[in-house]
Length: 192
Image (cartoon, rainbow, N blue to C red; front, side, top):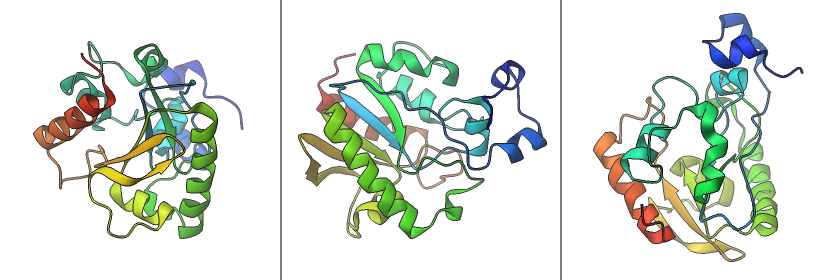
């Protein structure tokens, strides 16, 4: 499938462009030895259509990174690559874009978990932060997992679970997300 056109990247995608984004991927933002590798569940159709992580309006990922002092200013989704210079990256547990995560199968989560383990062993981040507790539980068969630091590791990487920052996740409000992301930032050794 072709790359998103520049007008889609810079503007709001049409309904047709969103439909065409079904099943597409968004490239990882990754480098060796990151402080934190954030792992989303999977790309939204909006993110796949524009080619950037957490791009859907209303997603609280980028504002939460600023509030928790991971970034010095509010980054737009199109500036995601700048995270690497700060020691952070983004990937997804399942690569294919869907309208909702409910479209994903249990098998996709398990396979995605194995692929993520391989990626983590190659790139060696200090911490992998999963953005969605249900996805983490499904991928790694950790039904009792709670938000925060986990007992397991992947290689040398500690595992951390955070709430999904989607605006649809009403269980966690802005201040809750800020506090939980700050705990991760402090644990990662970031001093911003």
